[in-house]
Image (tube, rainbow, N blue to C red; front, side, top):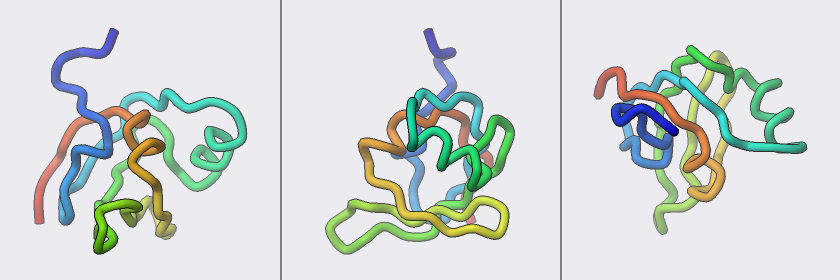
Length: 83
């Protein structure tokens, strides 16, 4: 069970910074996310949402990646700040 303060990455808004606590993704997508830097304690910046709201662009380290809501809703952490 997740602590109450943890939110899915999909709830973060454009301009938010998000600190990852847990990743509940399996298989190839999990390996891809880990390789790109989506690891516990990494800071993710929400760059922008597409015009229809899905996918959303995120920046981690020096990488920008677009994730769909179904993928980002399985990455949990806490909001750090809003620009």
